[in-house]
Length: 352
Image 1 (cartoon, rainbow, N blue to C red):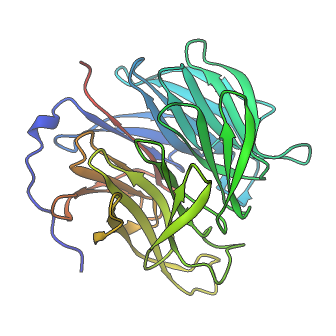
Image 2 (cartoon, rainbow, N blue to C red):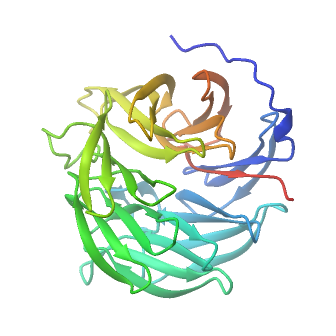
Image 3 (cartoon, rainbow, N blue to C red):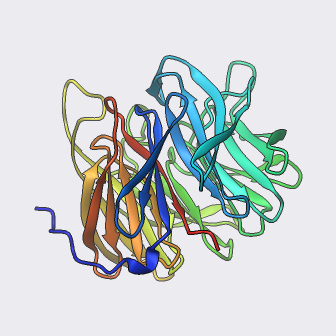
């Protein structure tokens, strides 16, 4: 049984905002981080997926991946990234990446004024990463990842190396962001979410890919990657398939587990409540887990690392979890037209 919400003092978060994508909305909703009060909703293009907040410009970027549907089952791929003013909550610009399509993962390098967007491949070339200049908001380059569907993307703290997970390819792509070339492949049997350590020496990758082409004998869990040797050095096992991965400012490694039972009418089975599982990034010790909504798909945390936010796409909810006690704090309901619902997340600290 799920635990009852725990009373937590969040008055110090006054002015902070949580932004949440609804895929079928299609919207970005804004909630007060101290009270959970719904503040505003911005309508965006169909099938929004991920969010990325640029704190220096107070802008929020949102990818729209498909015209309808989802990865591997859609009516066609979109080409846009929507830029939203985080404070006025108005659309500033829609960046069209055409002929690139299927934009999904986002990673920001504020020091170099670069936004990286993963895009899907075509018959003419493999998937890759589009490089956008955040000052002009114009694409300035593309890096091939040698895989058809790079999905999540993360960069090293120094902004020199990028990592793209690939659902169907048996490797994670490593790219040199200065030279714009693929430099290595890390063997992972189909990969989902990822995070990079603050010192850049470790990457944490969820695998295998959930459903469709997943390796049947692959152990579900988080692969710990030594980035210097581009090799997996450990696996942190999870009870079921993990998709999103997030590393907090306090060194907690968070993984969202999708739990199902077989269902002849669904390729991914009937959904059970998911789980947020927590590890120590330093010791790899499992710290515990807590039940969340159906099909956790994105995780973020508060800047102080105290609270986790887990968006669950089938239940279209966001669970707020106290990471010190692993107790539920609150659950947000995110509007949707039908499944899928809640997806991308961004925590927006109040303006200085």
